[in-house]
Structures are given as structure tokens and as C-alpha cells.
Length: 537
Image 1 (cartoon, rainbow, N blue to C red):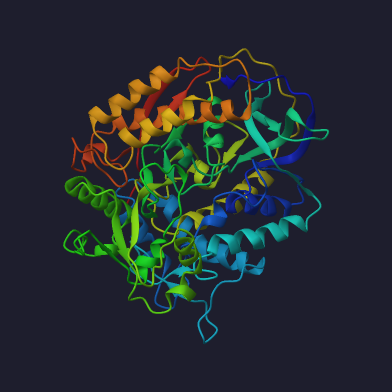
Image 2: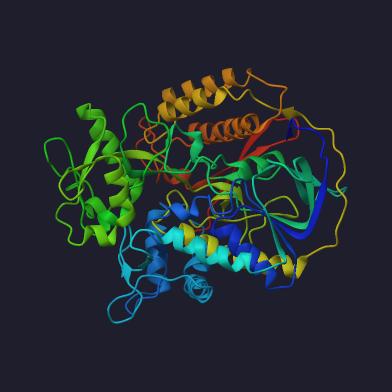
């Protein structure tokens, strides 16, 4: 299956194509170059406009004298609620410290204590201080800056900006040998073209724009996962959408990207209170406000539903040095006429991170030969049913290195793409807003058979609103539709509550569901679901 699009009008080539310019894409490109291979780095907007630069919390790694990969592993497995792949988690936590040190060697500057040691803080779900941060709460921006500087200094990495990836190209054997993409703007590569490569890596980030409210930037329309689906690759764990519990509430009518109030704020002692000033998290979890994100998000939503409130409050007034520690959060609040040093901050959950994606092995390989995925685009198994705070940047660092090594070991010769007869799909761009509202209403923090079925029916109706006029807005809307369909399908199948998937009609975690739901879309557009046993402890 593929998107309805014009025939390619130009061709480019490189040893490896990397789609995406967040931590996963940039690190993959740099690691690939260390093996002497040429790279075409394709990014949807400008090279610095992905989700990475918005990451406030930091990078989790066992670097402290009292910490260890084993302890990091334990915390990750607990947060993942029984669905983490143990082998993948062990790769993450054991190779993580080296990956972070390599990032520092590439120029990333992290905050340090007066003694000169790297400052390590704590976030929800972590029982040790192991979070590196930069600029207080601007870690992602610093990571992005350092990696971009390294990329720009390498003439063998060609960067193509303003390029929306469309579909995979395959050779006669069915192996992916490149992609089609649409470059926006004037120049010799204006419009739809094709990029040929010996290996293709998808690192397009998240899919937060599936929902009406999200912390993700506008470019996060899940283009890589949707491409993988249409290419015949398996996707998994897509029902596990992490909703950040503390996003600045801007009113019921607000849509799109919302300002994030970092989890690290609660790590420094912020309290969640209701309209009466009561700390409602106390007694709900041993860690109270520092409980894993899904626990806090669900508690907030339940409290809002019970009280009729549109949001709850975050109290940071007692935190010393708040402005210095959280300059980004402070500036965001001030820009919305809230002084956090004197006032409570209104917050509510919004979609934040997708634990699922294109199913990959420990070397980032999808189920389709020649196609790799990394970062939030991938389902490596490290997050399970719920990502542990600040493991996402680490995942991008660790698995990008493994992908580059695997490509270097197994790189084939260039092959030519072949034309295939497949079903095409393209939805009208006007479907997007209705789709987002339906997903937020029926498939967000709190779910049930009734709410999910209503959303499924809405999506089926939206599928009838097709278009024969290819454009960026239509391609993005179609990607969102296919991802929404996968999310709702999996959420309906999983009749239990686990991690970031909450079913009001199935409130218990059940042993029978300690398995991964894998979705597949064939060339005719027909869905199928299978199960994968989880290899845990």
C-alpha cells in the first residue's frame, strides 16, 4: 500500500538514507559516517525543528557512584509493567553510559556541580539520581546543538530540509532500497523525487499530532511509522501512548503543541493540588507526585472527572532557585501571564510519547529487509507498556550506534527499485481536526470499549473522505489516520489495564496479556494482528 502521489521527478543517492533530525537521526548519521559511508539526511522541516530540542528533563544513565546498570534496569522494568524485552533493556542500560560519554565527546555540555562533577537529578520512577541535564531544563536543545554542529562539520552528510518522506522503494527481491519524498520549496529537487540507498533508517520521531492536545511539535505526524506500515513492516505496542501529566493548561479550546512542565519539576519537590489545595497524589502511590507518569496522568484525569475540574494545579512556590533550575518552564509560564513564583500553575495531561512503533530487533532492523528504525519511530522493547522518564534520548543514542554497526557489517550493493501495483490511499486534509478530537475523546488517557468503539466508527466514516489532490496536508492527514487506526485496533484488543494503557472496563493487569500486540498492513490495505510473547526476567 502507498500514498497517492505524483511520479518522482528527480533522483538522489547515498550509501545510507537517514530520515529525521532528532537525537536518533543525527546520531545515526554521525555513527554511519564513522564507517566511511555517505549519508543523505532527510528532515521534514528545518534540521533543528524536531522533538529532541523540546526535551526538558534529560538523559538517564547510570553514571553516579552509587548507581549501576542493574539498578537502572530494575527501574526500567518496573515502569514497563511486564512488557519490556529484558535483552533490549540490558543493552540500553549497559551501553548507555558509554553512549552518553560519546555525546559529551561530541561537544554536549551538561550541568555540573560546584565540584566539577556532572549534576545528576531524579525523576519519576527512578530510585537513584541518574538524570543528566543541560541549561537546567533545556537538555534537548543542548543535545540537538552539539549533534547538529558535528553534522554540519561533515561534508559527506548531505542534509535535505523541508522534505516529507512518503513511501519506501523496494527492489525485485522486496528489499527496501530507498524512499520517495516531497521537497517543499524552489530548487532542482522541488516536488516529489526518489532517494536510492543501500540502507534506509527511519528516525522521524513521534506521532503526538494524532491527538488534539500534545507536547509534540507540529511535524510529529508519525510519518516514519506510517511508511513502515505501508511497506509491510510490523508495528507493535502502539496502544501504549504516554500522556505527560503536567502540561500547561491553556483552555479547553487550545489545540496542537502545548507547553510542557517538565517532570523534573516534580523531581525537585513540586506538589500537585486540586482546587481545594489538597495534595491528591498522597496515598495513591508510595512515590506520590514522583510516581511513574501513567500513574500520575490517570490520577489527574480521575480527579478531574470526579470533581468536574478542567485542570489541576502544580505548586512550585516553595522550590528554591526555581528560575535558575527551570528557565524554560519559567519563561513559558510568564509568557502566558502566570508567575510560578507567586501563583499555582494550571496543568492537565496531553499526549507526549509513543512507546510503540515499527518493531525492531536489537540492531534496529524492522521485519522488512533494508529498513531500520530508531528512537520514537521504533519499538525496540525497552519501554514496554510505559517509558521510564528520560530513557528516550538514551534509546536514540544507544540504538543508533547499533544500527550503524549493523549497516556497516551487512551493507549490500546498490539495487534498482521496481514498480509495484499497490492500493493507494489519500484522505482529505479537512479530516485531520475531526480525527484528532475523536482520538482525544475516546482513545486518550482513560479508555473503554464504548469510547474506543465510537472512535473506531468515527475513523471508518472519515476513511470515506478521500482526495485525489496530493499535497503535504493530505499526506500528513493520511499518516495520522493510519496510525490512529492502528492505535484504536490495539487498544480494543488489549482488554486489561497495563502501563500507559488504561481500560475503565478492564481495570486489572492480567497475566494472559503479558504479550505484545503486533499489527500488520498488507499491500491491499487489509489489517491483521498477531501476538508476540514477551521475553522478560
